[in-house]
Length: 438
Image (cartoon, rainbow, N blue to C red; front, side, top):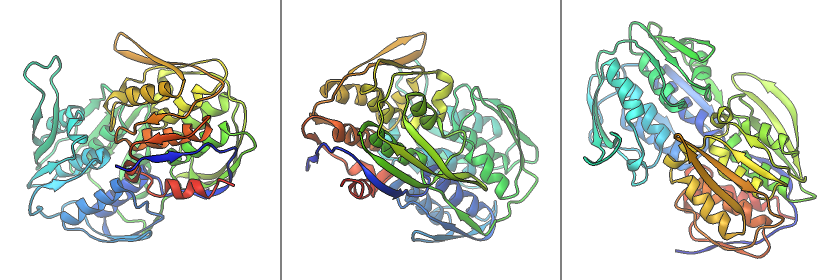
């Protein structure tokens, strides 16, 4: 396997048009398939996960044209056909969880298989409430000697007549919430999902855009399945804030940098990384703000001296995907940064607590984790400079991109064992990055 070399740079300059937001893209495909008629989707991101969602719905009988701008020819809630064989969803957790909500309402049986990493991620949090709604689901159980019962892919699901429920999520999860709301489309009653902490609301916004009977009140979201979805005809997917995060941190850490990120989604449930970086004294300005289905703006970021901060547990859902690169920023910030309630990182594509501590420690960072009462915190004492080192991506796209950012700031070259995993979310990351290096 070819090593990827990261050479330090002095600054980043220029502007970047980011790929469409991954979370929004998944939902755009799904709801377009559930509505009647043609929906055109512009600025669709051609990453592995979103292409997996397209593949899945084609296997369910939906006609979808590919390209940067694609068209979905929806057949309504009951227009899907039974797939000829098992559906393989690769490593896309979003595809899997949201798909379960839809298949729960179909009157046929489907087997879903996943890639190696996703097959080890817990699914009981979404399977349990779907069973309460009436879906019949068989999944791989945890080992007999396991301290906590759990279920994993592969999954066999037999849908049918569902009933509405009121369900309080034990763990904040936008994907589980979304799966239940999608399943709620197939009921004759109301389905209410109550979150312990508000998570990203792309599903609620998209459902409203498709004229679903959805209501949001505080931390509760209610959907009534009595109304058919209506295609808006056209959906534009703004730039991905999670992809933007790597450039925000890199430009902040490199003095004399000035980078403009064009047309980025600024959904309030996703802007935690901007809020925290600003608190760390990053020079970030929002320009050309517009609000349609989703708020969109350009983001200007300049090099600055970052200072330590405390990230609370309540903030984690708004920047869960950006935590790895935030750890890089914190490693070079002045003072001690504490990031609370990060235990969910243990069950991502890889154990991101382990991957980031191992890698950053090799570069000279002072980073550790503590655990008490089921809550895990990250403690980072800022250092003056990171040093080039041999690093591992652990097959995780966000770990890989975070370590590339760290390598740009380091004293000496860094070597990363494998960055092919970046194609999961941002295939053109290196290409975009190179345009900013003078």
